[in-house]
Image (cartoon, rainbow, N blue to C red):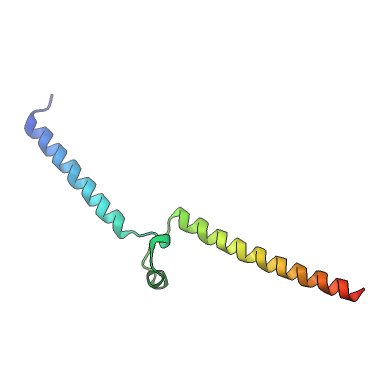
Length: 81
């Protein structure tokens, strides 16, 4: 099998790679975890949750706009009779 020196080098390298991957992942900050200033300057990374959040907010705004429009049309129709 493997001797102790090889195992120590392998374990040490694995830990180093793990720490390096963690540090690089911290730099790629999600839009949801960013400050407003970071979002405006574009210093964030798009993740799936960010995209879903933006799409959900957009659909909510469209839904509110359609509801307000339908209420206005209904009132116009009601007063026209």
